[in-house]
Image (cartoon, rainbow, N blue to C red; front, side):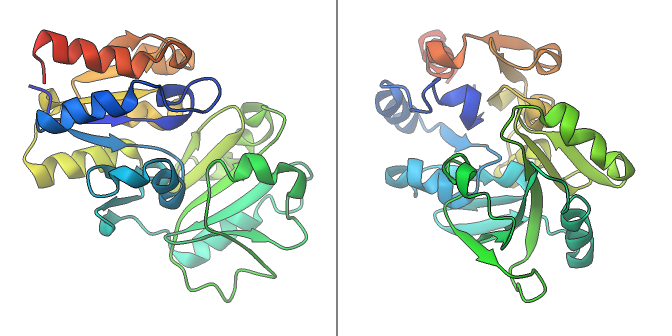
Length: 267
C-alpha cells in the first residue's frame, strides 16, 4: 500500500500555466481520509511552496530546495548545510559572466548580489523564491547556505551553465534542475536523500512510496521509491531512470495517476 507520495512542482504537478490542477483539492482530501501523506518535493524555496499550499501547511511534508531542507507543520525535520566558505567560492566562481544570475539560498532567505540584481527576470525568479534579499556582499549573511543556484533566461542552462561546474562534479552535487537552472548542493544532498531520510523516520519502505518528476533534480528520488513516475513531458534521461511514465503535466498526469492508485486500492 502506498502511504507517502512525493511530487515535483514545475513541469510535473503544475500545469503548463503553472497552476494546480482543478481536481487537486478533492484528491488531497481523499488521500487525507485514507491516511496517505503528500509531499511537494521541489527545487523551490519552502516559502514559495507554502504560498501555493498555505491551507495544507499542517498536512503536507515540504521537501524544498532539492531536498536540502525538509519541514512539517512549520518545523524543520532535517537539513544539509554547505560549508560557508565553499558556498561563497561556488557562488563567486561565475560571478562575472553576463547572462547568468546567481542565487545564494539560505534556510530562510535567498540572496541576490546588488549590481547583479536581475530586475527583468525577477518575475521568473519569484516563481521559485518568496523571501528574497538584495545585499552588497555575502560576508555579513548569517543564514546557513543550503543551495547555490544559477539561472539563465534563455533556456540554455545545459550548455551555458552546467559545464562551468566541471571542477565541482566530484566534490559537490551539480544538477541540471531545468532548462533554466543549475543547482549546486553538498555531495549526496538531493531529493532522493530526503526521501530516504523520511522513510527511515516514518518506518516506510520504498514499496510504500510513490514519486513524480520531470527533470534531473528528480533523478535520485526516482531511485528511492518503487512507484517512480517520470512525466510524459520529462527530460529523456529521467524517463529512462523511472519505472513508469505518467501523462504530461498539461494532462494533469499526477492527479490521474493518483486517482488510479485509489481506484486500484493501492492507497
